[in-house]
Amino acid sequence: MIHDGFRALFQGDTLNGWKVLPRGLSRHPKDSPAYAEALKHPGIWTIENGVIEGRQDPPGSGFGSYLVSEEAFGDFELIYEAKPDWPADTGVYLRTSADGSTGYQVLLDHRKSGSIGGYFGNGLGGFHAINWNVDGVYDGDGNVIGIKLEDPATTLEPITPDKPALLDFKATGEDFLKAWKWNDWNEFRLVCTGSFPKLTTYINGAKLASIDFSKVESPKFDKAKATALGSKGHISFEVHDNDPRMGEARWGKTAACRWRNVQIKEL
Image 1 (cartoon, rainbow, N blue to C red):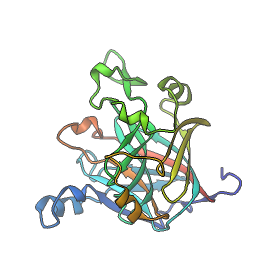
Image 2: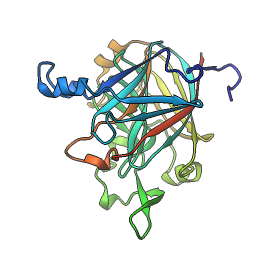
Image 3: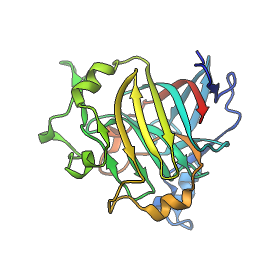
């Protein structure tokens, strides 16, 4: 369903107007074998019956990917529904660079020690603006059957005081669990306004996080790079690459993330 005043960002079952690009190139020198190898694996993106699906290329390879809009946007509201597998480390980047790699990420880290609905500065200093982490609920056979708040004693990524302090508004983890639907579609509504943007995240109608980058003073927020991005940028969907620290705990061998009903209203 297209909401009043919004327009669809995908037309039918095509990826027209979007570019598929490899993720993680910035980790390697351009003349290195690792860079050349990453270029060979740009990602697998398909769309069928209105559902966009992103996977590693080939599945389980560890290589990440971006799906990047050719169009750039300034102030807007963005609505989409997402249905990630577990584990899948993903999200949507706003005001991003044309290669999809640098921008304000709205997190959908659907994995142990991940957070959902908060923000990360990809290529912008690496800030994390989050208030809680999640973990899986497992049955006796080791299958994930639900989501819960993570025990801080077991976390891979501690919630240090600087992370929630960046947020103007921060819902509790319990608020998130009330809003989130396990193994189902969840609707995100993102509001992005201002040159140094103010971002607000709603999931299934519940306000979960807000941050105003015009007020953020942090060594992990690179204002020079944010200024260089400008007041308009692209939208980028992410399939994360794996790394030696987390491996398949970041993106499972058969994992995918799915999106649908992607629509925008420019403000």
